[in-house]
Amino acid sequence: MVIIYLCRMKLPQCFLNVCLFFLAINANAQDFKVIEETKDYILKEVDSAYYYSHGLPPKDDFIIDTTKIKKVNGVLKLPLDNGKEVVFTNNLDNPDIDYQQYMYLGYDKDIKYFLVIQKLVNIRHLLVNQKNGIIDTSLFDSFIFSPSKLFYAYFSAEYITSYFELVFFKNINTGNVIKIKLNNEAYDQILWKDDFSFMFYSKFYDRIIKEWIIKKYYLLQIKQ
Image (cartoon, rainbow, N blue to C red; front, side, top):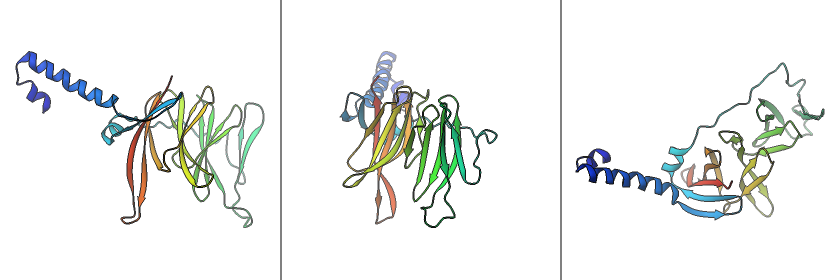
């Protein structure tokens, strides 16, 4: 409707206004408030329209092949390149051991990672590096990979004097991990925008209406 209205003007004026209109949209995407800047990233607060219009749907490239890997008698063994194994064991029948259950979600041959779910009080996603057996743990959403799998981002938590949640992103090639902490907020729903930027939002639980309410939307730009 805006473009139709503008094009009722004289052609040069119409062209100028259309250009200004789209420049304004682009400027709005670039001029969001900077929350934090480090040597590794720039963190901005964006709006819901930008979050929902620029986020890419996550892809799932983890494939389950039960001819190669399967759980036997509650034991899941993941073979590493160095000849060793990472072993996960279900403890379902022993009352003296905390309840644990592991579920294998597949293998990504492009980046050589296994994905496992650990069911405790909270569900944890475990990402196992086949090269060295290093395990990354996400307490909330699973690991969300950038479009070309240069990075993955995830949520976890720490407890020192109080409980707080963190946002992580990791360079798959270098293994470098960066963590971000924001004012004891709870985080959710990572969406990558491109290979070097992703978005997420913070939320809080409203005890009156008994629902989670979205608080802020964020854009994180990784410095190249």
